[in-house]
Length: 88
Image 1 (cartoon, rainbow, N blue to C red):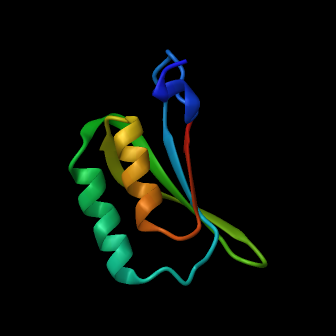
Image 2 (cartoon, rainbow, N blue to C red):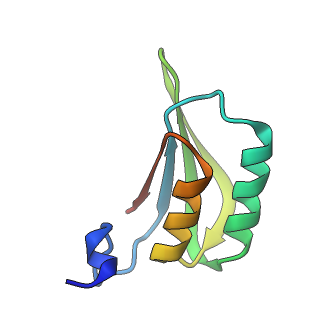
Image 3 (tube, rainbow, N blue to C red):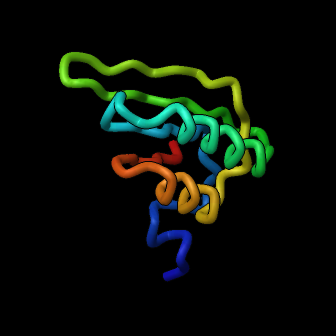
């Protein structure tokens, strides 16, 4: 088993990347850092940000396209305390 399959990557390239934050309380500086991380991996896969709040969930098309990789996912996961990154 390769490291890629261990964290949810398959042989097939994902058609999108969903970043799910479980709190609306993330600092704006972390969002800026997320932008820098995404810009460091340019590609063709669109990125969506889902913010889950107690009473609702909002999905945003953040107008970024990336090359999805285990390294990119790891960088995003290290940035936020409560995040789920889902290649779809």
